[in-house]
Image 1 (cartoon, helix red, strand yellow):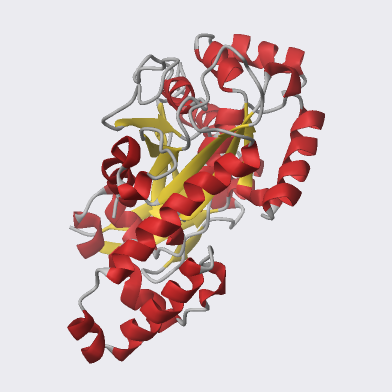
Image 2 (image 1 turned 180 degrees about the vertical axis):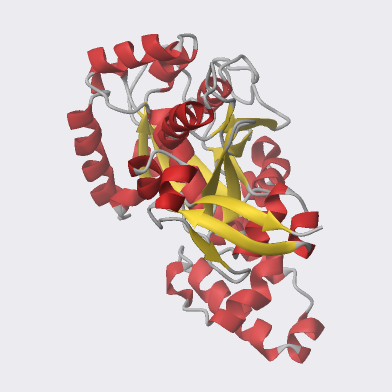
Length: 365
């Protein structure tokens, strides 16, 4: 399955505007009418990582370089999927096609418009709670159809899968998958079905410009956490209009703009980091004269698996991984100081890499 994040929601809730801001360019048509997006637009977005700039400064001094080494961030793939409408699971608004696009992503970023604007058409929209439930209901119905289509003969010979399907049907029919209570074995058996309701979800609240400040963002998350019944960690608040304006500015201008708004970190940055986390990904770092880089691995990966992200040959020729924590690397001003102070340690192939580890791999010939 792709490690990608699908941006979904009703038509005209700000999905394509948000997607364009993520890519800092007009990649998707953002228009004031339903189904402006038909085929999904895909973009690779860098994950903001303030650690890399500091590592680059340390590396420049340690290596005696005239300028900072190149910085390469980790990335996340976002997919802008056309708006769904009520009845999508039965084909309304090209719904079956759009649902198939959602099935291909790992995480759903569900955009809900949390403000009124008489100039923007809201196709089938009522209020944020109803809008969210409309999309969620269509995903549940689509999954129920998928389960109904499973060959009964298959289930007779696979009791674990049959049990999982029975539990899910009952839960979906009541409008939820939370009560399914699948065992680990049952979950593994139905993983191949790639059910929409089983996907990780981020709820993206698109708010008005006047509601875009740290205090109001906190209040809005609390409000919708209670309305929709989800933990606060499930939400990200953005203002698609403001994010679109920020995308046209350089870094220093963006910081100044956000300060004027009373916002520490942009909504897009919060969304990108949240998406990376929901995908179950972490970064290990490398720091040298050629580049300072964040490498993407799955949380729980071993040192030898991390080495394979740099080059597949590194897995076969792996000897050791020299590891320094980010804090030690900073405090001792790089590799040399960390080694002299005994803060650099050698780890074997089974070492579980931690987020932010700085690693230099020892590879044989």
